[in-house]
Image (tube, rainbow, N blue to C red; front, side, top):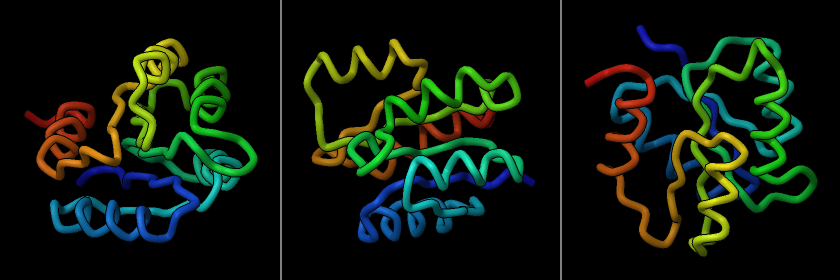
Length: 124
């Protein structure tokens, strides 16, 4: 069995969409509405992967990943940024902070998302 995937997004629509895609692919999903709530959940339970929105009120996705990477117990969990921004600078910043992937909402492709997740959670 896989560890659950944590989806962090302040948009209800995006959370529901990602949850339904992941659950239909057989993953367990936990939801958080903010980066702060996401960090709290990560400290309480084990997750196999995190999908995190870039633009959120409070802490944004980049800062969330930076914070997670500084915590030795959380650093190994792959985190994928999900964003409506697709400027090269944003992709570069995602890589710089240690994101394991970057999905652009406007070009959202279920197959691409699931392929990336399978790769990151160690399935072929």
